[in-house]
Length: 228
Image (cartoon, rainbow, N blue to C red; front, side, top):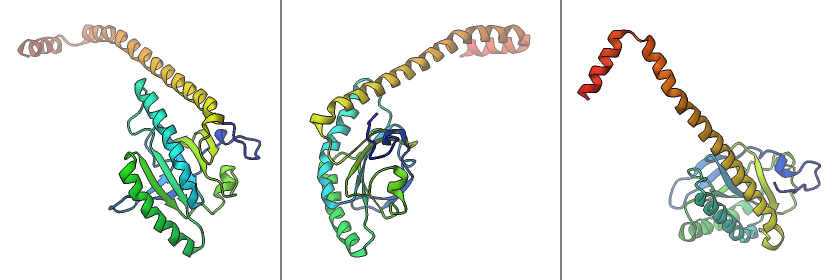
């Protein structure tokens, strides 16, 4: 996990993502309501929280991180359906005229996302973050952009701020990827083992059922098999 503490005794990756009601903006379509993190599909996703308009510059680096994760999980047949979405969430200011400026810029960003990014990248906005959101998350409201990799149950797997710094953070990110891949492979093997045990037990259960079944039922079943 990421060891980002932000002055707290407990690192952010040991906390849970606080529920954040958002509006999902769709180019040439109606907006939709989406609550983070519960409204996301199952699996891992990237969330980028923007508190300044210039923070959109950090999105490219996290788009690259998302693509790497998506490719590695797909190559190992571990990627879930609709996994590795990216949510760029704009924390709108309280001052109404500034919100208008934000919304004007967001229309431009929507067009860029439509033209240059995959459909798994979404633009969100929210004005409900001000009610103690940063305190409950354990992060500072000091003008930074925060990037996190989270599950839809709120578990935070990675947390850092501003752009992804490859020369400083690549080693830790690779470790996180390896741990996640190993965890999924272990779960997959456990499920396969349970399925194999169930398959081996099935013939014995069928034999026992046939032994106690009424003769008429067994005959009727045999007749159906022959007709089939």
